[in-house]
Image (cartoon, rainbow, N blue to C red; front, side, top):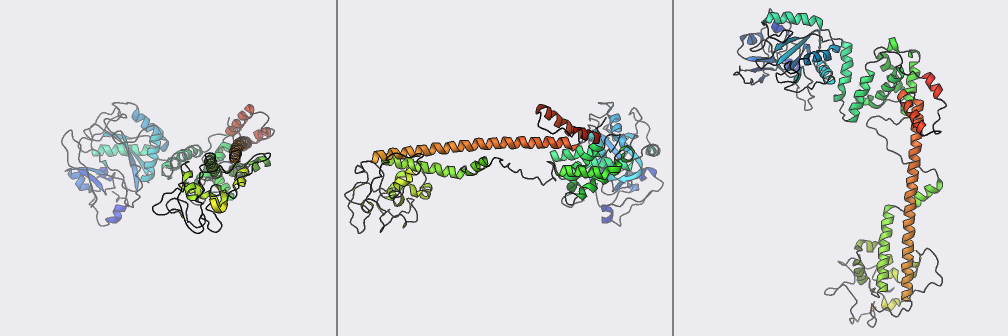
Length: 597
């Protein structure tokens, strides 16, 4: 018997070696003995309670003793695979008499065509051993077995169907990840089965004899193993969703290579896609472009099966690869993880571009709406002859119209006496859309006697805020309004004791002025709404034109790609949209393309 294969456990326990029984060929079939499982013989109808022993390897003499049930795991390499089918599984012969034949058919492309069948225990479960001659990597064999069975529709899950060695998960925490263990054959309740899955007399020598015969029939082709392995690696890329399916689809078409004439164009297109989009994900390094991309396309194509026999473009493969590389670099495809941002189309018409630039932004529209509310509030106070003179009282009155204090502070030029009274006419008549004949003269206010914005005692610049919490006009024990008459004796007083803040009858043209203000506000609002509508429709038209331009460019690129599928799609679109695409070069393309027959 040869010594066990080197494993991490071997390195951890270099001094532990069991006494081998060199003449026992049956035990030599299972050389890896580290991290074995064992269980006491259980009562009938109950499952054994398995435990793992990692302190020492399982010895031949301990197995021969038979005091316990034993199971073994797989090392770095193996010369057999195992399929486990439980008694209650849908794939058991009692439930599906053809399931095992389908399993063997799924594994046949790998070279596994024969097996040894035996019961696992009294439960009636089946173990199918597939021995082969040349030793294989346990990790690779596990992935390929899982891939072949899953592609055939089988579901690998405990209680139904399991494989050994199993595709063990990656240990991110650095701990050693072990293969699953299976119980050794021909222990209590385990018997060899004939072709009809009936038990026969079982002895270790009989098992070894069948093993040797089956081993000669199973011959794994390393080339096939590598091809299937590439297709099955899709779950180890660190990506998911559509990208994972895309890689799987590309691998499925590429790895089989050439099987007939007329496939070069299609294969080169798929090779180019995989190399350009996913090469840095699959193989590391920087994304491919330029000469590096061309070299990868040529190297991959020349290494595929059937290239020498079926490819009729070997004399110009570099030129064809260069064309495909240039095509994909100018297409909508991009390196995975580096999706470009979509640029907004620039309008072609200078007038439309200028209109979009001049159209107000959202912040500008919000500010304009706020200023409208302030003007309406001022107009309403003037119409009701209730506009206070002092800024604090005026501030409080405007708050009642639902205007925030912050907005009033930002737009104080519309209402504060320091601005409003001196520029009253200009503030409102500026927004008038058309000149008015004989516009009314604004009322002439007495700035020194009726307003608190006198040049020598301005109440606007001194307070830090116009909010009612800290205002320069607020005095302890007094209200916020100055509408009530009260005698005040002070030097430089901002108010007149003889004038009432609500008395605006001294302005004979007040009503006509208010009408003009309201007219100007309404005209300004209508003009702004019309500008917003025009800007919206202009944007929609620009977007539609840009979308149509992109579609035409894409269809023209499909037509020039040489791909039969893309060309067919472009021609179908051209039939629905005639006289748009340039199809004059179609005959030239057909002569240079190799369409599948």
